[in-house]
Image (cartoon, rainbow, N blue to C red):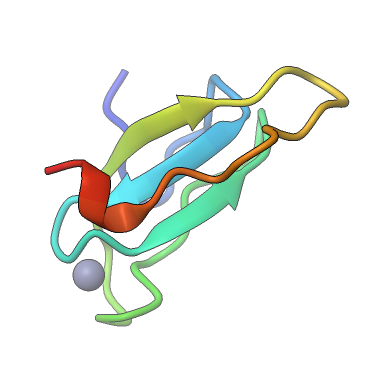
Amino acid sequence: MVLATGNKNPQFGIYKAVCCGYEIVVTEGARFPDCPEHKRPARWELVAAIDRGRMPLTLPSPSRRG
Ligand SMILES: [Zn+2]
């Protein structure tokens, strides 16, 4: 399964655009959007999975990864 714009998200979680590192939360079953920064299709990378009905205590800092 390629995590890219227009594909269904198999895992509720925080995703990061490969092109620029922009982070978004995508719910399970939702389709990946365009990169909000570049306004064009992007590939997405899972940063942190979120358990159904629960939010993580702390959001990961964008500068800690990559
Ligand atoms: Zn981008």
